[in-house]
Length: 241
Image 1 (cartoon, rainbow, N blue to C red):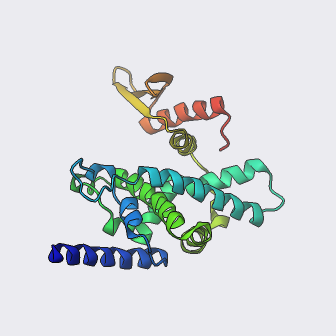
Image 2: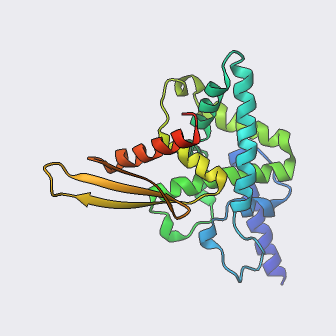
């Protein structure tokens, strides 16, 4: 029993040291951080520590991240309108950016993820981005809003984002729409068909949301066809790009 306690204590200290290295925060409630870094692929019913996965913390962290970035942009661009601020926030907190930042912070090195997923770069980018949002939620619960805000502003935005450069980039309709889906807790699914009967190969994609067909598009590029579907969705929902 004593050996088990010492083992768990060492694991907690190791995790606390890693969290501090990434965030600059000394954890008080280490269990919350363990939960933040635990992907649902590793969850088992027989888990004895009662840690489920990081999805609830991801939901919380996402809301805090949006609030902090909204305030940051509001103060930095006092003469810009709501449309510009919304677009810039989307450019900062989209899934691509969050995944990249999680990797740069070294978060992936100590996340709990099913081994089979580690070789899937696309999946790992999403998983890492979600874990980063969950980590923000953990910091908030452990240390409060001011500490969570400091981590976002000083460690994430200041070190890894060039806001002036982001102003010159464009955001895909798909990135905007995927952000909306995440916020609304809706599921997207795609069906893909290839037509080689003509001189130019056509990719036909069907986009469904929560099982309901929304749009169908054809294009020489599958990626472009998906982008066209998302563009229509953004226009339907009046989402700012």
